[in-house]
Image (tube, rainbow, N blue to C red):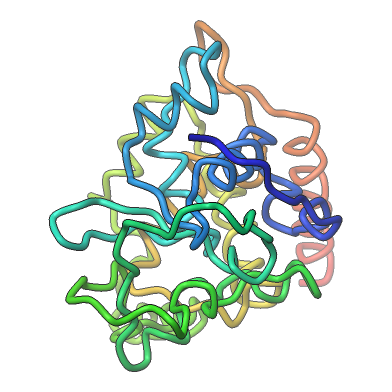
Length: 265
């Protein structure tokens, strides 16, 4: 059953949601009204779609939920045989009605270093309205035997990952990675692919996400392409992908930078 929830101004200034398709923000807000008083709900994409987007077709809620998790807005986990979702910092920013029932879903267990990773990714983006891991482990809730969906073991920054690739003489995104086939089938040309990688690399080495750590950077880049984080292209019903206004702008800036480098050489 859906409940009334609060929306704080900081949501609209979030650096990730602010440049992503607004449909992700709608889904994120929809999860709030579906979640119980502890910010938990069952991970059932079809049911969530029916509740949040009853009149929209062509929406893959499962992929959208994965995107929200990859960017630190939610945690998807399994406990006591149930697939669940925990909304990060829900308890901190929501004021459930006093008569609202206690959560019947188990909390995600946070073990060791992972407690610093789960739910803390976007804490810097919302300032006072930030998302942290606190709401995922309420003090009054006993620990369960649930396994955390993510672990910090083996995670590294993109800069460190690129340094390893250079030392080993391998490509950051292998030629046989599934994302290359995906881009080819989607009609995303080589120039678009290169620009997408440039934006991704810049954001994660010198930009707002330079301190972000991941286990699988090729997979994170693949998500950025599939979810159009940078909105560089759009797909027509027929034919190859076309540049968006954002894409043309980024392309011109990149072309100008290349020209400057060639003139300086």
